[in-house]
Image (cartoon, rainbow over all chains, first blue to last red; front, side, top):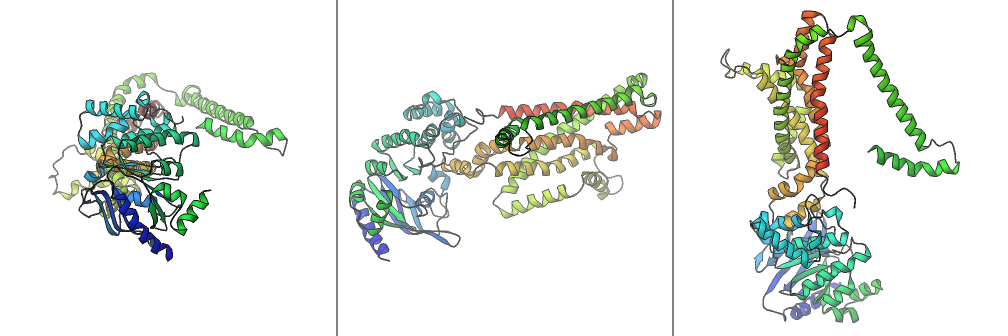
Length: 265
Length: 285
């Protein structure tokens, strides 16, 4: 009970800190509720993500953080509340989901590269099929992106010829090819061998430095502390604490935050 | 397949074999027994064929008759080949839609596809052919049915409807074995459901279903033998004509066997080629 009270309080302050950055929020969550059957997994989420902001969502497993990301591009439906991208409600029944999704890049824990297409084709598929970009231009742009994630020499490789880290970097390039306004990262290093985590985080760090708006669900606390502009701690479907990552890791405001950090050590 | 199986057997069987614990049968012994059985079986079949066609005087192939009947069997073979090709293309084409219907989220599409599959899998092909060939024209007043030589069209329709059900089930299974993340990744790029199916899910489902579809298409070839009951001049009809005229079953039997294998063996090769082609850089890293 006291946790919930704290959550409301710190949500306010976190929001105030976040909105200092620049103008209107890019992604807004307003009283978002999500049920899986009887299970109440998101219990009134209020959150705003500003342009160029990197919001890192942490929390114990089952806290609803991945669900929150999946609701953001409507891979999951919400039952109450609203999620807006640049003021447009993506959760509305009549929303043009295919159109809105083009502005939201998503990277998954399990990569989900298309195994029947080469790295290059994985990256060009969206722009060609969805945007109608001519093949040649899509190709040039894809090579640029593959170069950016350090994989221009693997353009003609199939996913199962690549390491997990390489696959995940192709997946990031694939999402970037749609020129998204915001990138969602759903535990993208959790399925990787430890020695491959660094190369993926490196790409994400570069993206953040270039000013990409990002929502990152992760267990990589080092990354959260270094790259995050704001950290959001979720537990049991609620945001229990949010604020500056450095402050959070040094001195959490809530008991729940303290307990979460103590378990990490 | 056989290689990976015996590999697994080695992993499990070796510790026992090496450690002298109990009377475990070693992997090598199992393989020798397998080879022995295959060789014995092949030898028995060859010996039987030799006895029937060469040694036994009453069942010898008659070279003169053979030469006379080859042209008509070739014609029947071409007809079977044509019916197979038409039935194959259309059953695979419609089967894809049946499979898509089976995985559809719309309960109407889903139940229509289910009823279709249950009916065409649940009744014999022979019965379906009879309904189409004898039943449908009888819905018109006598002599008013517009299609004159209905046997071959009826055959193609029947084979298509029947095998589309089986191909549909293979496709459904193929789609089911594509991870959900593939559809999610495609939709996340902004592709519609139809685009995602066509570009991402179906190509993978197709590869997963290829063995089952190939199997079904081989059965389709053999199912053309049922067309003899709706007066299609295919291979079995030719056999019956020749046999009743000459009382020599073995000469046409040999031709019929060669004719069917002349379609099914290349078909098997074609399926294996298609499987190898969608290898996508190999299964393992």
